Image 1 (tube, rainbow, N blue to C red):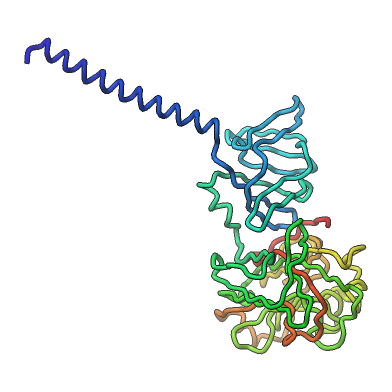
Image 2: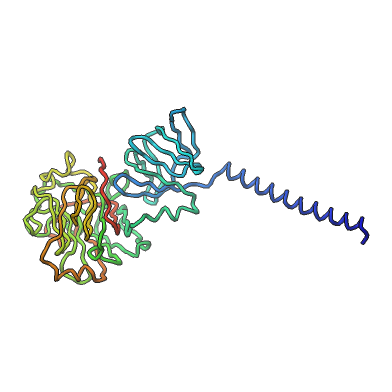
Length: 375
């Protein structure tokens, strides 16, 4: 082939390569345009002020915010995080810009696995947005060992290596325009089988929403009165963790009581009825948030500094206790691997069974400081 032929061949090759890149570029541009026109749907992880978390798909496609320099319409796929601080919203964009101002509207609407929720902005601490490809990370909360919505007669807890048995419970309205389980008859009960025992955890938090429709009913006689839950461990007869209302927790304490067997025991001190404790304000028969919090080496909250067990209602600490002395012979039970069961409203184990509704039961492997909330 002569020089002129080689030049023509090279030119053809270069034109072909240029055409290939032009087509690739056009395809990429078209893909980018398509994404711009129809961005991938987002998932949102909502952190509530009571430390609960909800994951779902937002109904909105954008935010309208009034800032110091005017009103802004922000497409939701440009938002990374939404924070609520002192009544204002702080919007962190994906390009790291931050806008602060007031959001239009009063609530965020989410489609979740347990229905559509309308969550007031006043109850939200933060919202994290992600594409479906990143949504898996939203389903995991640091330290969360168990989350049982209690919004259906059955639940698949395989993600937590746990299972639940529910008998004769009824569906009722929950605390967030959702559903909850009502244990209203003597035969109604539930047992959550765990892969571990909270009694053997050096620290942890058990939190949930509960409603007691008969707050004026006396606690009655006996040691196992009106518990919100107990924890059993393996085949032992004792209940390592007890949380509920009682006239005597075994140490002369009444009201809302919490017990970690042979380690710590506390109670609010007064009341023969739920209403009489004064803990639930003007709505003793309504929904309230409860938390059972412990740390063997001592809690670090200002309200319970150095204590090992604390109880909270609606995000406010109501009582705490230090370690009980004289039970060193039982320390080994807290250090032995074991499986546990969380039990609600079981007539075979409780002496007094008034109706109780439960929602969003959670266990963390860390002591979480309560955040005050309003019902």
